[in-house]
Image 1: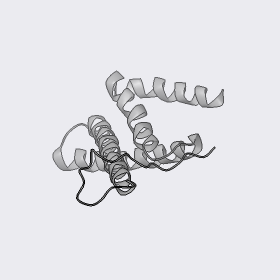
Image 2: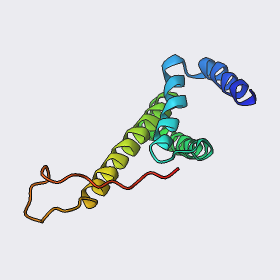
Image 3: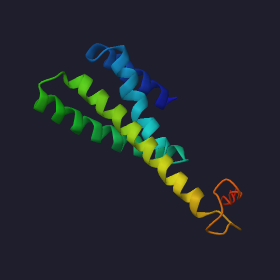
Length: 122
């Protein structure tokens, strides 16, 4: 309940500062970036905090350097970090799948062999 109250307070305070679209970008993008790398909520929260802090630093530097609005620069940096995170995760996952192929001679086509993905444990 406390977390919901804190998120609500952050959203209401942010609407006054940056507006609706930027609030959505600032709240969702760090969480999306962190979720690409984690599966547990506490680590996702920590990762989102780190991504958010990095987005603030990058956005403020870009705002100062290019003389543009700070809020938009921070939100853009957050969305770019989320996109880069998703792309990097996709490339790594593709590489893992490629390395786990079994029963495939080197000369065989990639479509001919099944994938051997790691087993999920509970």
